[in-house]
Figure 1: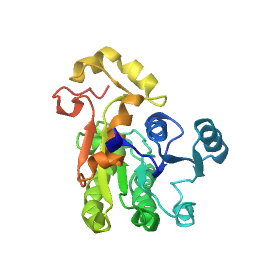
Figure 2: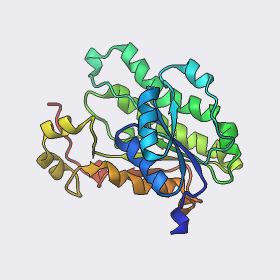
Figure 3: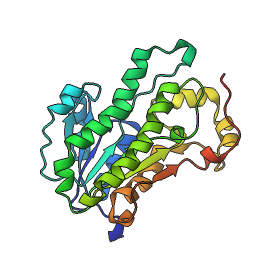
Length: 249
């Protein structure tokens, strides 16, 4: 459907060399967008981008000076997906506050910083969409993950503020919150906990695949969501609604 087309749009997806980010970037390309893949290692990003027919952008989001020096090559940016994230699991008792600060830098400050840096390009679009990838843990607490949960909760609220501030420029800002998704990073953790456990905890009865994150992202990026801003789209199989939570062990 034309309503979901991204033909002629420029898109940047951060953290897109693997996992959910790569799936979203691939889906955007198939929907017609010119996509910039992002990662920290230029050669890795370049190779993956070349294989997909995408553009490459290398940037270390843990370094504010690199964001400040960014010169985005397009005059116009239609879709910005702030997907890159960092997770360091530890309880409050053992939390290193330097690690806490690193998580906030990548998951929160870099999102605000990069979006601000790219505002001229976003303003140049007639239908710009900013999609901030949070998590069900922007709402649901997760034992042993205070830094990550705090960063995602803060980002969810920051998105709402961005939405009302940028609406006058025609820029929509929404949160996209996945639940349990099987990626290369967490596959072993999911296997250790057990797919049977997730089948019990998640109302739809299974962990999601990365490909299932493409549709919701295209909806938020496209004209199909032209009157949607300041909200959160959860793609979690009903996981956040369930009363059963996994134990600390």
